[in-house]
Length: 380
Image (cartoon, rainbow, N blue to C red; front, side, top):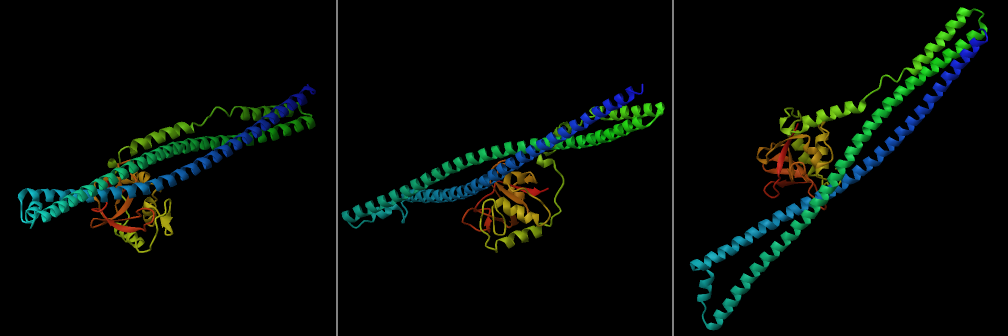
């Protein structure tokens, strides 16, 4: 018996040592996995940032095209109105009509000259109208191309954001796993110390009861290490449940009853103050040295403790939708369709808003009549 006791304790020590080494290796692998996930997160975030810059630039072009389309439409309508007025004048044969102009000729030569003049004028008007329509078609086609590119980038951004969310889940799971491994390693180290102490006790004691108790202590230590896999954490399930709940709660912005406590008059004052600083449009910018449309709204509201994302579509998620006619000073104005906006501004009242228009322009005040927004939103 005396020869078997040390052998039993030696076996226990070897067993516990192997467990300790196993957890050290496992923890090392987990650290490597966490490092790999962190690297992927950094790379994906860099791709998201680059996509946001591209989207911002495309949004600037969308704003420029939309403004040009609006201007050309006004010119075309004005030209059509002028031609219609000429036609009505010719039909009624008023004093100032084209027919009166022709019939008042002093001679055949004068009549021919007048006919040539009228023909030249009509051709010029028609040519101008045709050119304006052609210009509008080109701008509309350009905007359609830009819209398609913006939609593609937004789709890419959504995909990258989903990857970031999935990587976040992986990171949390690995952190939980590492935390568990650290605890298990501590148990293994404590068990190893207990086994070594028991082995030393067997070697030095002459009391068989004491030796048996030492073996029992080592056995309990081994059991405490090997039985720790029964409690597994289901972080991903919890994440998916939470994510599903969030999706349900955010599916309809109009159901949200919370509202911002920001002093809107202060927001308006802050926005107007930016128009006096000669701040240039810089896509991707959100500082006094340069900002784009969503960078401006983000900058202003950050002054009052509201953290808006640097993207027009993302900012839609922070508002309760409303019509432009319902907009109040301090509300956000959006251009484009809901969920696919490409420009945003801060309404300051009186049919005016502050925005960062496009490249080559500074932050300024514009009117709704000159550049009509599609819808408005009030910060929740």
